[in-house]
Length: 131
Image 1 (spheres, rainbow, N blue to C red):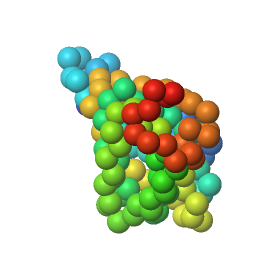
Image 2: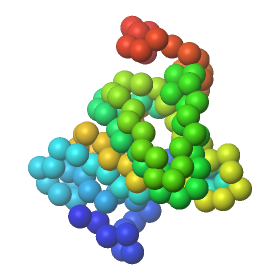
Image 3: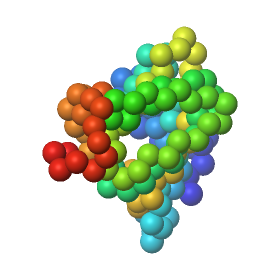
Image 4: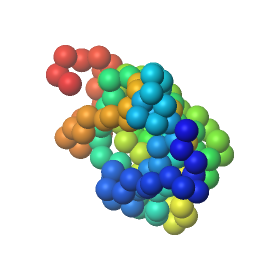
């Protein structure tokens, strides 16, 4: 396990966003899940991406906008979202306050596949062959 106070922050995952891994296969060998904490400054965001595993995200402070293949969702107040494997999505903080999230992946390492921005904003039917 990785403790918040001593954890190394990952910067560069998206403009205005920083991440800390709490657990993954490198920190806890043999674990088949990963998770951690993220902080988004005002205007902070992730690029459009997808995962080869399911993802759960809980917004613990502030408000997040989540775009999933053309659909936009507003999350706050410990609202939790579940993004199924293969769905193109990204989070953005449109507010003037900091936004925090806790995330858990059903995969051993927090790997994501970054794609063209339009894949996250176009309304697509789930599981199309052109991903």
